[in-house]
Amino acid sequence: MTGSRIILALDVPDRKRALEVASAVSPYISYIKINWPLVLAAGTDIIRDLGEFRPVICDLKLADIPNTLKLIADEISKRSPFGVIAHAFVGSDCLKELVNHSPEMKVFAVVAMSHPGSRDVMDSQVDRLIDIARSSGVYGVVAPANKPDLLSRVRKMMPDTVIISPGSGAQGGDPVEGIRAGADFIIVGRSLYGAADPAKEAQRLMITTSSR
Amino acid sequence: MTGSRIILALDVPDRKRALEVASAVSPYISYIKINWPLVLAAGTDIIRDLGEFRPVICDLKLADIPNTLKLIADEISKRSPFGVIAHAFVGSDCLKELVNHSPEMKVFAVVAMSHPGSRDVMDSQVDRLIDIARSSGVYGVVAPANKPDLLSRVRKMMPDTVIISPGSGAQGGDPVEGIRAGADFIIVGRSLYGAADPAKEAQRLMITTSSR
Image (cartoon, rainbow over all chains, first blue to last red; front, side, top):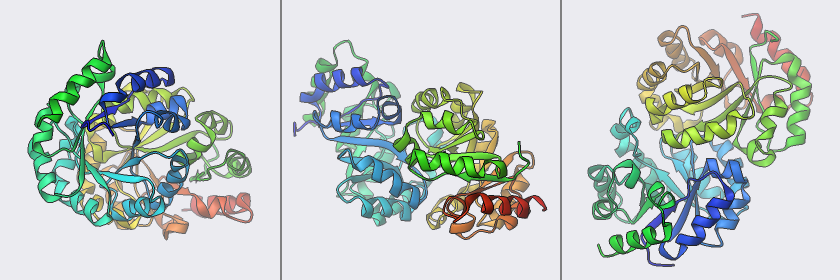
């Protein structure tokens, strides 16, 4: 590993561009996070291809019944991702199904989100969502860097769990503040792949966040 | 349309088998619902191919931030599905993004689910989830037939919204009870595609549910 606390959110629905960005920034990041638009545009094999650069976390925001999650895990785990992201709000039986069915694929549970709509219901349920994540034995959780108070709360309630944090840059959060609030890794998307020089920006972010 | 109140949940991660079942039962159903395992195994073009039999609802249980939902909608809507299913839990800005970005694709919002884990958080938030769905202008909602009290509550709060209901058969609910509780359409999966004669079972279900 690079020791970097940066995760690249590779939200570009284009195989060629995704591989270019991954190649350029890989010296300065620890993981690559991809989501449905890229998987739909490039096929599931992109998971394996990007895995050549850095371990891949599939940010699929899974939120279905256990039987369906099992079938999705079967399709995804063939391509050896490092991890998969699922929602805690669907309940502990769902998360446990993923944890137990594909033990080689780490499960990260979303306990809070970064966008304005997450205030409608999710923010008020964060304690329950943390309980669900904890009781399900997940490897890590997802909580946003642009809500430092909430992120601190997650860290306090889950001192030993890996926390990865979106919501920096384009979504208003500050990476350094995210690290201070308890994030282990900061997820950076648009401000990396949209930079004039993604490698330079990744290096700058790695240095800024590693000194905290 | 057939006048049937049955939606086939085509949860088979195999293109050939999916087309066989769709062809056999299409005279007795109104819509075909597919989810991620089939899309991952067969590619997104399966949406268009199944659309030759009946209008297709993509049950993707979307639960991401608005920007990502927009990119997913771009990939899916190219294949002209009838509709897409997203979670109300993530908030009204997410549902509105889908409703406004791809107006030709009907949005169904999940306001309640059928599996045991939905009792952990979701069931206690059903009124708020209904509010989110209502204020977002979705075409329909998803609420489970195996929780008739909760389904009746959704119907009462949303008298003019299309309700589609999973949770029958393998998950314990009764299709006729689901219709009585307020469902417009009953979603049937395992007990159709797993039947010795799917067409015969679909016909039986169509008749049973249409007389109520």
